[in-house]
Image 1 (tube, rainbow, N blue to C red):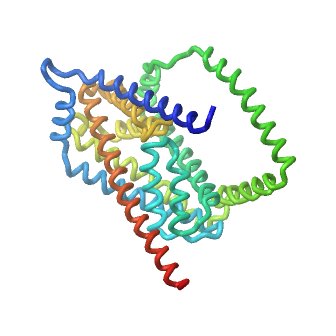
Image 2: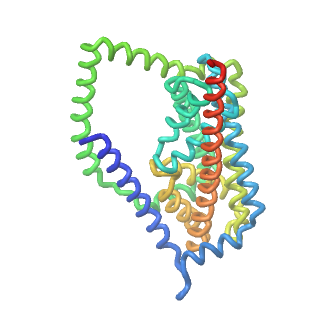
Image 3: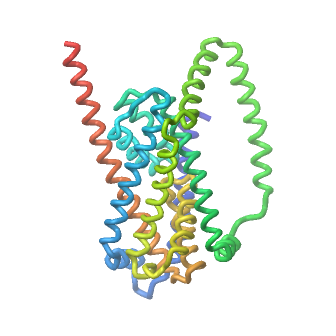
Length: 341
């Protein structure tokens, strides 16, 4: 199958799953006879406290600045000193791309950093992988803390989810995937052994990527890196708290509720869907309804407004970053051209 066709089919499947999950979530938005669901969502937005939403936007922007600075720390041990502005712009463009191509932002932000600061893509991508591993560890810690505070409710919520126990389809997929992957691996190994150019290129790429991966062990200020990592997730938590306070249906929820919903939302956002669309719209309303007895229509409306506001921020910051990056790249090119003349 041609790679373009395969990629197109993957996007169609992802889009289909996203639309299906959003449709499933909207079904829970029960409105009165003659009332429109979109009008209900607009009314929910009108009732929201805009000051809390503005606070969430500021906290979001601050978390991205801290993340950009943490990324710069990982790049220094491998011999590159990125500007904070470049890492921030690249990060925001990555978030924008993730809304279109799941996990595509990780590669695009490395490429954008190369355009701005000429830092090789392979090395910077290695540091991005390290970042994701650190974030995964932080997410696991958040989930553990959530279960320590709300174990009974969260275990009950998980038990209520319609998770399939039939492993037949998974076994069939494995029976097909394992031979295919084995043949591909053997074919690549044969090319690697027979073709000297391919061998040299693979070794060079791996050395660069491994250098980025190992950067965390060469950090001069490991304590500061840990502080930044904790601060990022504390800011995420504060964003969740601000949004819950913005809506009448959720503003009475306490610390434990914020912690539980933050964990549920983080898991939903980790799904391989554009910006967590679909998975977020299903899990979070169910969590609000099951754990804290928020009426399902209010829970669904809250989730759509919250996620929509967050997505809008990604689009605005990402689009501005694209424009600024384009301007900077053109300016650097013109300056270089003037020097060579």
